[in-house]
Image 1 (cartoon, rainbow, N blue to C red):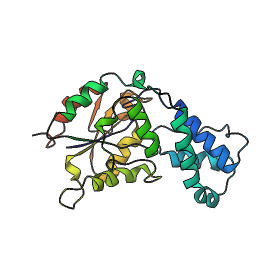
Image 2 (cartoon, rainbow, N blue to C red; image 1 turned 45 degrees about the vertical axis):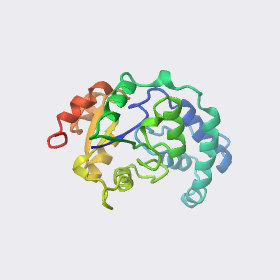
Image 3 (cartoon, rainbow, N blue to C red; image 1 turned 180 degrees about the horizontal axis):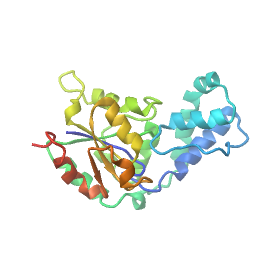
Length: 231
C-alpha cells in the first residue's frame, strides 16, 4: 500500500500560523502589497499557490503578473518559513501520530509519503521539526509546489512511486487527510481515502471518504475496512 498523508489537520494540529505569515510576507515583498486584503480566503485543503492567487486576486493583481512572479513568491516563502518556523513542532503532533507512523513504517506491505498543499520546502521543514520527517523519503509524495490544483497531486505521487515503470496502482493507494478537498483529490484520481476528523471539519462533513475516523491511531483498523486493500 502507498499511504499519502496530508500534514495540517492530519499529522500536525495548529501549526500553520508561521506558514501563513511566510506566504503573506512573500506576497507583500514580491508584489509590493502594503497589506494583505481583509477578504476571507478559504485555506483548508488548498495548495499554497491557490491560496496566494486568491489573496492576490482580492488585492487586484492581474492574473498574468501572478503567474509571472509565482516562482519568486515560492522562493521567498520558503526562505522566510525556514527562519520563522519554531525549531521544535513536536507539541503540535496530532494525538497518536508518532506511534501510528512507527507502526505503519514497520510493515513490509506499506510505504509512506506526503500529499499536501504545502510547498515542498515548507512541508519538509514542518515534518522534520516535528520529528517525523524520517518517515517520508525525499523524491516521493506530492506537494503544492507540484501543481496549484490539489486534484493533480495523487497522480503525481503515484508516478513518483512507480513500479516497473508504471505509476503505483490506484487500487493500492490511500490518501489520508482531514478536509473535503483531500477526499475530492483522491476521488479525482480514483484512489482510496481515509478522512481523520482532527481538523476543522466534522465527521459528517467528511462522509465522502471510504472510512471516517476520529483519531490517527485508528488508521490501521481503517485500512482493514477498505475492501481488497489489505490481505
